[in-house]
Image (cartoon, rainbow, N blue to C red; front, side, top):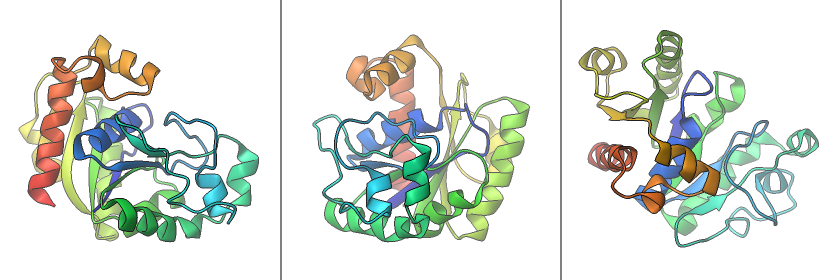
Length: 217
């Protein structure tokens, strides 16, 4: 399964959601935000190298006990050197090798968001209760529908409870993921929240979100 994690507006916790979902689903996390990578990285080949033909996608995956990651480069020069169209083949190659892949899509609705959605079997939409974020989420949903990326669930970040109104508007189950100190601590450490504090409310929220994905894919 290739699961795209997208959200129209930046700053809604998309990368945090993608990282935690990858951990919960035992999937490889692919950072496909070619211009503004945010997933933790380390030395070695990255997605920029893969898209430029300098590295094999599977060989570029960094395996670890907590989460396996195919990181993206962090330079504009690297982004310019690659061919974004090769992302489709790269995602299929990683899925063939590891079965499940979670893709952290770019923020916004630029053309490069379309490629992960085009190849994805399903997607998770990330938003917050903020009105602007919800408006952008509706636009992102329209793009996902147009590209036939089935909407598996909605991550309703920084919310204390799910919203039936949001679920009806977006047409998918909504899972509230409360904000707490463990989220920031986990991202600073490049780890899923459950690895920092498995009793945290956010860890429970991400676990529930993964269950919804499994039920609908």
